[in-house]
Length: 134
Image (cartoon, rainbow, N blue to C red):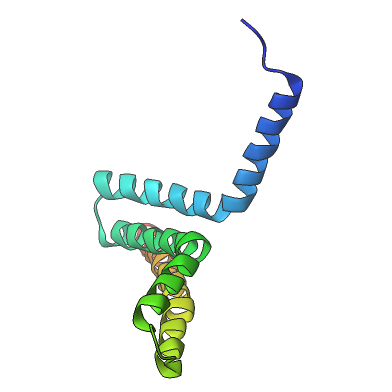
């Protein structure tokens, strides 16, 4: 069996590193999503659901901005504005597709994740107060 040539090993290592650097937020959001799914299965609660939906929105926001936004924007503009230029329609589409969807899903996702963390801390804080009350 032939070992992998040194140049191929280096190319694989560089490609892996660049892939991780390019997608580290998506990887972290995906790990959060998997953990929250497991949490929802083994200990279903509102907090677990908040974390699950929050990480899902964060991952969607990342993927939408990196990979979906430009082709979808061009396709939508080409199908809505055909013959004559409609500046207001273009402005509304750009506002909703470029600003509202990615920023809204990012903000709502973080609010949901932070709310779940806040609820966990609140629960443990009150639990701690009850055990040291007496």
